[in-house]
Amino acid sequence: MRRFLALWLPFWRTERLQLCQPDHYPPDRPLVVHAPEHNRQILTAVNPVALAAGLKPGQPLAQARSLVPDLLCIAQDTDADDTALLDLCSWLLWLSPLPALDAPDGLYSDTTGCAHLYGGEEAMLSLVRTRLSEKGHVCSLALSDSAAASRVLARSRLDRACVIPPGQQKQALDRLPCSALSIASDTTSRLNRLGLTTIGALAALPRAPLAKRFGAELLTSLDEALGRQTRPLNVVQVRDRISLSRSLVEPIGTAEAIATVIEALVPEACALLSRRGEGARQIDFLCVRVDSTVQAIRVGTSDPTSDTPRILRLLKDQISRIEPGFGIEAVTLTISASEPMEAGPDRPVLSVPEDCQADTLPASLIDRLINRPGITSVYQLAPWFSAWPEDGQSRISPGDVAEPADARQMLWVRPNILFDLPVRVQVTALLPDGAPRQFVLKRQTHRIAAADGPERLLGDWWQTAESYGAIRDYWQVETTTGLRLWLFRKGDGTHDWSGSGAWFLQGVF
Image 1: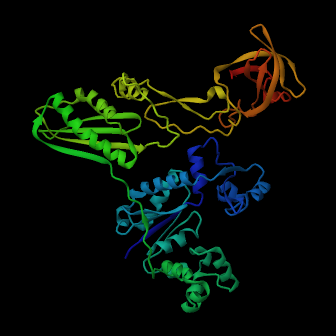
Image 2: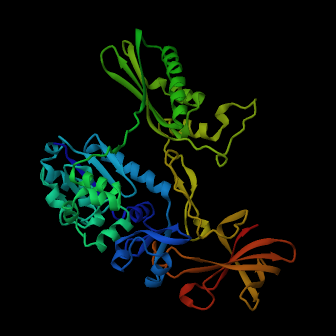
């Protein structure tokens, strides 16, 4: 008897956002995800706080905003959701070798023959729920003889788990509403008008009239739930790592011989990476000596690459760390970490003059530095979302992937030159609308011919108490001498709690 586990993640989209950017979407604020449908925005996901406030998927966004004024609204990113769900499905491989997707917010796992490894089915479900909770997800789980029945049971019990004994799924489904089946909403409405509100009442009726009135979709969904009919699952096939092994005719022990073996393996590995559209981030080279011990070297790259000369240079630089002993009789080259290569017009292309060596490229230099023993202070600057422009960069290790900067507060043009620290100026005159008219910088007076603004930025209230309520009003100004500058005032000019009212120069256009 086969056993299928179904997992329902009711708050999947909002949980993903809160896990990726917890500072931007605090768990105690109502958060909804919306997508266009029939020329209007419809809620596709809500978090538990929004659910408790009376919101639910399917509501118009305008109605939700009228009910909850302080609502956080995020446009749905289907591609990011699907990628994250696929990653979570791959993570489920620890449970059984057959995880499957149930898009957009569910997973399956064929757990036949696996329950005894975890102390029984009840203990297995408890372990799955605990591990998902540690990853920040609320889930409902159900285990039964068919995937469709497990799906219906999981989606009928919010934040619960149930195990249906073999052969008893019909009794478990009898009292559930027909809306739990995978059928269209209009079909559910027609069934309710006829008084068919439960799956048990539906299953007791003759099949021919149901097929004639509602079509084959209803019977197919019912048969799948009762185990009379099966549908193949969309099982996730995890792509194997690229690994190339060679057994050597004679043991080798010189640096030149090891380099020759590396030159034979790296082009083949790079060709496989190119076919997949991926680039290596971490490469392992293992050498098996005649005494059965293993010598290993590992190199990493600052960005995904399938460039053969670049990888060859990195591996050859590490040959001196290999101790061949009495000789090396087998080698293995493994791409232990890879990422998709960026492609398209958005990817910058570096053009190198013919008289320049490849080592002059920044990426190659960074790779050689981070793989050199003893060097730990190599970092890159990456965009970072911050309320204040001077904090808009962060240091990351070359091997890390930077999160894209949030551009919601960057709707206005930014200056070409941005100062590390704002420069204090003294504004001596204001226009009636609050714009600066004249200011003094380093004892020199500048008159302003035109000003555009204000662009109001709010402090990182979630970071420190000092930032709560902090306000900056930015103005793009042009002086009578032709200078285009970026000035801002701390505070809104009215309330003392919003800022001191001092003026600063932030950048030059």
